[in-house]
Length: 348
Length: 277
Image (cartoon, rainbow over all chains, first blue to last red; front, side):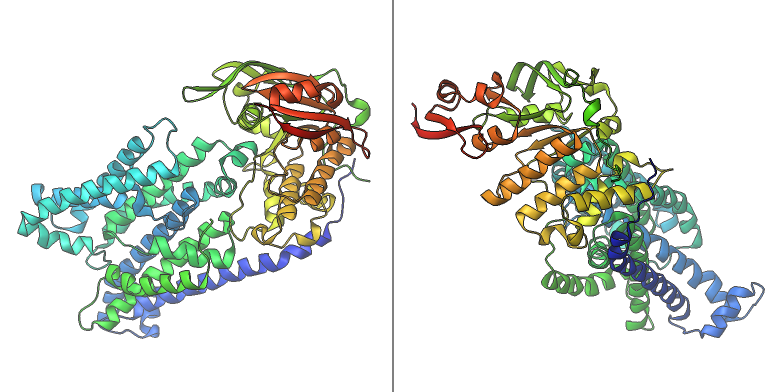
């Protein structure tokens, strides 16, 4: 029997939702482009848009501006885009999997694991450059997550979002205690570590972006593949299984994606809070709870937010600069409070 | 009339054919055994209500029938095949289920909820299609939810919300449908509304329906077959008139009651007298 049935009613009825989602996507693309441009143009030394363009299109241009743009500003901007997108995406994944509005990628022990590894690398091995301890940070992030998962799945019910969050909180507390124990007894390590731990895009050479890029790429791919499963998990595990979703598979893919994204971002720039927490909330208000839209839009919004915060940090403290992690905490906290006051955030 | 929603045609229904069966099933949470050595057969096109006092294991049994809970011994068979060894997605194409009071994420629209019912029929190569679109539209219209397709589920009344979920199960296009207390928290007129809808799914769409119900009178009115459980065991099974006897009410529900004939539907109707001790 032919299935040529006209269904104009539903197609037409859905268009406002679709239009708003497309509008959100377009708006975010413009924001990211504007933020990237600002990040290249604005700094201790402001460079005009014309000079930026000239430096980008003509790689043989040898002016001082051109060298700054190509060797400092562009790598920093690329790193900011990558890390911001990773954190926004990881936050949306965590909130989707835990169905907890306070879900944050740091919950899984990623940040604590990375912190301890970096402290050990500095104090025991004397490594002090970001490109030197990026692998330690990454290994620490992975170890932290694996430990949290092992502890969280030890109970009779296996790994659930609640046991994982509890295990993450407990293990993080332990790891941070170890970090503090080392720092308190070692002044030199403290000096190096405090630059890593505030979270910054400064002083990272272009090599770092390339080192973490493959992990971020796999993480992004896994995250996007996870979107339909997250939509089903949002209806509860029983309904998701009833609709043919294998729960363990969805959880494993999501967990791997969060670990890769958050671990790589933390390894590259140090722990950066608030992006993963705030961005998915703001985006959800625009796109609704469909993860096929929420995830990519959170990545874009995360990238834009991180770059804007980085630019603000360069402007407010001239001729020095404020680290992006500090700026984000300063603008992120009031923003989040305003969001909570305006909107009911319960019941994901 | 198009038949986009897959259904077993009434003339093709073989009432002898067993679709879903439990064989010597033992169900337990951790060490605590809830259901022990239970046998049950559900034939094609039947409408069965599982009744019993609180904690008798009826919802647990429904979970096992829907592959949400794996029996510690015995097995559940779907079309003669062990359901535990059938891939989740294959099961989801044949068997749909609605848990008690399911929750939707804030802001999810009715249209998007119903669309998610198409998940078992999609994969990475075959995403949203015109067929899916048509099935969802028909599921919405069949449950009178078309007008509300753009409303968030959390903004609906309890009765409308239950209709939206049933619409999702309908869009899933399964022959079998398991519902766990679909009338919980609804007032009487919405209970009737929801059960009328389920009854039409059975009568007009040929769905095989299993529903856990608390209200014995409604169960007797809508279902062809009642299954009564107590303490994890099946104590009676048959037509409502066969099962709902004064003796059974005393044994299973510890209730002294008269059973009269429902003046509207002609089914047995329970009039409680007092609780037995």
